Image (cartoon, rainbow, N blue to C red; front, top):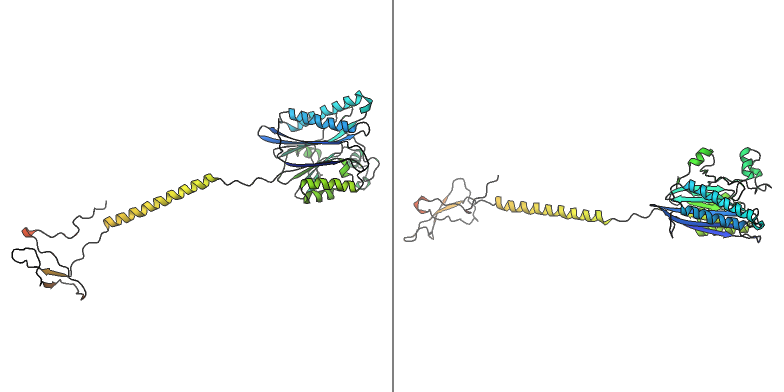
Length: 374
């Protein structure tokens, strides 16, 4: 895959050694890649174990190797790639631990979240946890690999016996163990799924504003789930991360506290496309032009075909031409009323020209008859 500078999810992180003066053995990394057309985010959190036996070295080595294995992959099979990364990092830690008394007994727990596009793939080893905040409700997706968890599942202890139990921090699975640990891909959405259904949840489709939390047990030992939920729901990412660390420290901070949070951003606002707008304007202009042409054509046709015909005269005058001037009217015409006509006193008489010679007939104005309608 190709490394990129910017992740497609919003991320934040916080880490603190705690209040007891311990070395901070927690390590984390957030990496962004491009796998073909899809963006990829990888969040890795490791909690070193072994105390003075260099737990921080194991955690650092695990984060580096896992990130390298993922970066060198093609990103086509996230779960398989994560499995390979866990095996390789565990073997490298074991080899280093056996090579020197300084590193003898070191190891690390691990929590992994791979987001490809909008799909979530997870894996855990040990008691580092992964949570999902969706719709204001916090869900623990991962399962602890501890003596306590196995005792609960086997019915050997009750839930009310967990807090303060002497075996509460006994780890059953860790990186650097003599046998390579199996990465746990069970992804529990409601806590009641069987293992088969929990595995089938891999590739979970994330929703806008979903928040992921990866954390070491230094947080969950001192801060209750409801408190984590409330802070994650109400505060911005970095503020929430800092507030959770401060709360754990305020309650003693007996262990290192590290967490990584990531949020799925809301979808970008739809951009206004000018193509439909321009096309709509062009159609409107064209339709308006066609309507204007139709109206002008109708008016022109009406003027051509609908010109008024001459109104028959109510008075016709017999004009007697003077000698030598045929066709000119005299000043004192003799009026004759046409049958069926009504005389209007204010009507101005219409004078008709004298009859034409040689029997010609007077053609009423205009002389060009209207064209016949097809």
